[in-house]
Amino acid sequence: DAKTTQPTSMDCAEGRAANLPCNHSTISGNEYVYWYRQIHSQGPQYIIHGLKNNETNEMASLIITEDRKSSTLILPHATLRDTAVYYCIVRVASGYSTLTFGKGTMLLVSP
Amino acid sequence: DSGVTQTPKHLITATGQRVTLRCSPRSGDLSVYWYQQSLDQGLQFLIQYYNGEERAKGNILERFSAQQFPDLHSELNLSSLELGDSALYFCASSTGGGATTDTQYFGPGTRLTVL
Image (cartoon, rainbow over all chains, first blue to last red; front, side, top):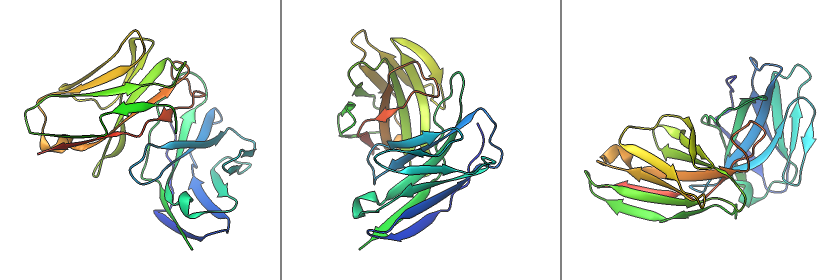
Protein backbone atom coordinates (compact mmCIF):
# COMPACT_ATOMS: atom_id res chain seq x y z
CA ASP A 1 0.00 0.00 0.00
CA ALA A 2 1.16 3.53 -0.75
CA LYS A 3 2.65 5.68 2.00
CA THR A 4 0.78 8.70 3.34
CA THR A 5 2.01 11.96 4.85
CA GLN A 6 -0.09 14.05 7.20
CA PRO A 7 0.65 17.10 9.36
CA THR A 8 1.36 16.21 12.95
CA SER A 9 -1.25 18.57 14.36
CA MET A 10 -3.85 21.14 13.38
CA ASP A 11 -6.11 23.57 15.19
CA CYS A 12 -9.66 24.57 14.31
CA ALA A 13 -12.21 26.89 15.88
CA GLU A 14 -15.52 25.36 16.89
CA GLY A 15 -18.15 25.84 14.20
CA ARG A 16 -15.62 26.36 11.42
CA ALA A 17 -14.71 23.83 8.75
CA ALA A 18 -11.74 21.61 9.50
CA ASN A 19 -9.72 20.70 6.42
CA LEU A 20 -7.28 17.87 7.00
CA PRO A 21 -4.78 17.22 4.20
CA CYS A 22 -3.13 13.96 3.26
CA ASN A 23 -0.40 13.42 0.74
CA HIS A 24 -0.22 10.05 -1.05
CA SER A 25 1.92 10.86 -4.05
CA THR A 26 2.79 7.20 -4.79
CA ILE A 27 -0.82 6.01 -4.83
CA SER A 28 -1.71 3.52 -7.53
CA GLY A 29 -4.80 3.59 -9.68
CA ASN A 30 -6.31 0.68 -7.78
CA GLU A 31 -5.86 2.08 -4.26
CA TYR A 32 -8.57 3.59 -2.06
CA VAL A 33 -8.10 6.45 0.38
CA TYR A 34 -9.62 5.70 3.79
CA TRP A 35 -10.04 7.99 6.78
CA TYR A 36 -10.43 6.86 10.37
CA ARG A 37 -10.29 8.89 13.56
CA GLN A 38 -9.50 8.03 17.14
CA ILE A 39 -10.85 10.07 20.00
CA HIS A 40 -8.54 9.82 22.99
CA SER A 41 -7.99 6.14 23.92
CA GLN A 42 -11.23 5.05 22.24
CA GLY A 43 -11.37 2.60 19.35
CA PRO A 44 -10.74 4.05 15.89
CA GLN A 45 -13.89 5.11 14.07
CA TYR A 46 -14.43 4.81 10.32
CA ILE A 47 -15.20 8.14 8.66
CA ILE A 48 -15.20 7.83 4.88
CA HIS A 49 -13.36 6.36 1.91
CA GLY A 50 -13.02 7.04 -1.80
CA LEU A 51 -11.27 5.89 -4.96
CA LYS A 52 -11.29 8.85 -7.36
CA ASN A 53 -14.51 10.78 -6.99
CA ASN A 54 -15.30 13.09 -4.14
CA GLU A 55 -17.43 11.50 -1.45
CA THR A 56 -19.74 12.85 1.23
CA ASN A 57 -21.54 11.24 4.11
CA GLU A 58 -23.14 12.39 7.32
CA MET A 59 -19.78 12.81 9.02
CA ALA A 60 -17.52 14.40 6.43
CA SER A 61 -16.55 15.06 2.83
CA LEU A 62 -13.53 13.63 1.06
CA ILE A 63 -11.98 15.60 -1.77
CA ILE A 64 -9.43 13.70 -3.89
CA THR A 65 -7.33 15.67 -6.37
CA GLU A 66 -7.59 14.76 -10.03
CA ASP A 67 -4.10 13.22 -10.06
CA ARG A 68 -5.03 11.37 -6.84
CA LYS A 69 -1.74 12.34 -5.22
CA SER A 70 -3.45 14.08 -2.32
CA SER A 71 -6.78 14.35 -0.58
CA THR A 72 -8.54 16.50 2.00
CA LEU A 73 -10.98 15.40 4.65
CA ILE A 74 -13.46 18.14 5.45
CA LEU A 75 -15.49 18.33 8.65
CA PRO A 76 -17.91 21.10 7.67
CA HIS A 77 -18.78 22.41 11.15
CA ALA A 78 -16.25 21.16 13.66
CA THR A 79 -17.37 20.63 17.24
CA LEU A 80 -15.36 20.00 20.39
CA ARG A 81 -16.25 16.30 20.04
CA ASP A 82 -14.29 16.21 16.77
CA THR A 83 -11.02 16.63 18.67
CA ALA A 84 -9.19 13.42 17.75
CA VAL A 85 -6.31 11.89 15.82
CA TYR A 86 -7.27 11.53 12.16
CA TYR A 87 -5.65 8.78 10.10
CA CYS A 88 -5.42 8.77 6.31
CA ILE A 89 -4.83 5.22 5.01
CA VAL A 90 -4.30 3.97 1.48
CA ARG A 91 -5.47 0.44 0.66
CA VAL A 92 -5.37 -1.62 -2.50
CA ALA A 93 -8.84 -1.83 -4.03
CA SER A 94 -8.88 -5.43 -5.09
CA GLY A 95 -8.34 -8.47 -2.98
CA TYR A 96 -7.28 -8.29 0.60
CA SER A 97 -5.35 -5.72 2.60
CA THR A 98 -5.06 -4.86 6.26
CA LEU A 99 -5.39 -1.41 7.80
CA THR A 100 -1.99 0.14 8.39
CA PHE A 101 -2.17 3.16 10.68
CA GLY A 102 0.48 5.86 10.56
CA LYS A 103 0.86 8.64 13.10
CA GLY A 104 -2.11 10.67 11.84
CA THR A 105 -3.02 14.31 12.49
CA MET A 106 -4.03 15.46 15.94
CA LEU A 107 -6.92 17.87 15.37
CA LEU A 108 -7.69 20.17 18.29
CA VAL A 109 -11.03 21.97 18.09
CA SER A 110 -11.23 24.94 20.43
CA PRO A 111 -14.17 27.05 21.61
CA ASP B 1 -21.32 2.62 19.84
CA SER B 2 -19.84 0.40 17.11
CA GLY B 3 -21.59 -2.78 18.26
CA VAL B 4 -18.27 -4.49 18.99
CA THR B 5 -17.79 -5.38 22.65
CA GLN B 6 -14.58 -6.11 24.50
CA THR B 7 -13.98 -7.37 28.00
CA PRO B 8 -12.46 -6.59 30.34
CA LYS B 9 -12.03 -2.81 30.03
CA HIS B 10 -8.96 -2.79 32.22
CA LEU B 11 -6.57 -5.52 33.24
CA ILE B 12 -3.62 -5.22 35.62
CA THR B 13 -1.28 -8.15 35.99
CA ALA B 14 2.33 -9.05 36.72
CA THR B 15 5.20 -9.99 34.46
CA GLY B 16 5.25 -13.65 33.52
CA GLN B 17 1.50 -14.04 33.81
CA ARG B 18 -1.04 -15.02 31.16
CA VAL B 19 -4.25 -13.16 30.33
CA THR B 20 -7.17 -13.59 27.95
CA LEU B 21 -8.94 -10.73 26.23
CA ARG B 22 -12.38 -11.28 24.78
CA CYS B 23 -14.15 -9.73 21.82
CA SER B 24 -17.69 -10.08 20.49
CA PRO B 25 -18.12 -8.82 16.93
CA ARG B 26 -21.10 -6.91 15.57
CA SER B 27 -24.07 -9.07 14.80
CA GLY B 28 -23.58 -10.70 11.41
CA ASP B 29 -19.87 -9.90 11.10
CA LEU B 30 -17.68 -12.87 10.28
CA SER B 31 -14.22 -11.32 10.63
CA VAL B 32 -12.47 -10.30 13.82
CA TYR B 33 -9.22 -8.35 13.88
CA TRP B 34 -6.89 -7.66 16.81
CA TYR B 35 -4.73 -4.56 17.12
CA GLN B 36 -2.23 -3.40 19.70
CA GLN B 37 -1.65 0.27 20.47
CA SER B 38 1.34 1.22 22.54
CA LEU B 39 2.89 4.65 23.04
CA ASP B 40 6.01 3.88 21.03
CA GLN B 41 4.59 1.64 18.29
CA GLY B 42 1.23 3.23 17.51
CA LEU B 43 -1.68 1.11 16.27
CA GLN B 44 -0.44 -2.22 14.93
CA PHE B 45 -2.38 -5.04 13.34
CA LEU B 46 -1.85 -8.37 15.08
CA ILE B 47 -4.11 -11.01 13.53
CA GLN B 48 -7.40 -11.61 11.74
CA TYR B 49 -9.86 -14.47 11.92
CA TYR B 50 -12.63 -15.08 9.42
CA ASN B 51 -15.43 -17.48 10.27
CA GLY B 52 -13.23 -19.43 12.64
CA GLU B 53 -10.12 -19.61 10.47
CA GLU B 54 -6.98 -17.52 10.69
CA ARG B 55 -6.97 -15.20 7.65
CA ALA B 56 -4.01 -12.86 8.14
CA LYS B 57 -1.16 -12.32 10.51
CA GLY B 58 0.61 -9.08 11.32
CA ASN B 59 3.18 -8.24 13.97
CA ILE B 60 1.98 -10.79 16.49
CA LEU B 61 4.51 -12.21 18.93
CA GLU B 62 4.82 -15.97 19.39
CA ARG B 63 3.78 -15.51 23.02
CA PHE B 64 0.42 -14.25 21.76
CA SER B 65 -2.28 -16.40 20.21
CA ALA B 66 -5.89 -15.95 19.21
CA GLN B 67 -8.88 -17.98 18.20
CA GLN B 68 -12.39 -17.45 16.96
CA PHE B 69 -15.15 -19.66 18.29
CA PRO B 70 -18.21 -21.08 16.49
CA ASP B 71 -20.36 -18.26 17.88
CA LEU B 72 -17.81 -15.90 16.25
CA HIS B 73 -16.51 -14.31 19.43
CA SER B 74 -12.74 -14.20 19.65
CA GLU B 75 -10.15 -14.40 22.36
CA LEU B 76 -6.60 -13.08 22.38
CA ASN B 77 -4.28 -14.91 24.72
CA LEU B 78 -1.14 -13.18 25.93
CA SER B 79 1.37 -15.26 27.87
CA SER B 80 4.73 -14.77 29.61
CA LEU B 81 3.81 -11.12 29.86
CA GLU B 82 6.52 -8.47 29.80
CA LEU B 83 6.41 -4.82 30.80
CA GLY B 84 6.46 -3.89 27.12
CA ASP B 85 3.18 -5.68 26.53
CA SER B 86 1.37 -2.91 28.40
CA ALA B 87 -0.87 -1.36 25.78
CA LEU B 88 -4.39 -0.85 24.55
CA TYR B 89 -5.71 -3.87 22.69
CA PHE B 90 -8.48 -3.27 20.21
CA CYS B 91 -10.71 -5.70 18.45
CA ALA B 92 -12.47 -4.83 15.21
CA SER B 93 -14.99 -6.70 13.12
CA SER B 94 -16.18 -6.61 9.54
CA THR B 95 -18.83 -8.34 7.48
CA GLY B 96 -16.59 -10.11 5.03
CA GLY B 97 -13.18 -11.69 4.90
CA GLY B 98 -11.12 -8.53 4.88
CA ALA B 99 -11.42 -7.25 1.36
CA THR B 100 -10.51 -3.63 1.03
CA THR B 101 -14.14 -2.66 0.72
CA ASP B 102 -14.87 -4.20 4.13
CA THR B 103 -15.23 -1.47 6.72
CA GLN B 104 -13.74 -2.41 10.06
CA TYR B 105 -15.64 -1.36 13.19
CA PHE B 106 -13.60 -1.10 16.36
CA GLY B 107 -14.48 -1.94 19.92
CA PRO B 108 -13.67 0.25 22.93
CA GLY B 109 -10.48 -1.63 23.75
CA THR B 110 -8.90 -3.37 26.73
CA ARG B 111 -6.18 -1.50 28.59
CA LEU B 112 -3.55 -3.97 29.78
CA THR B 113 -1.04 -2.90 32.41
CA VAL B 114 1.82 -5.26 33.21
CA LEU B 115 3.62 -4.46 36.47
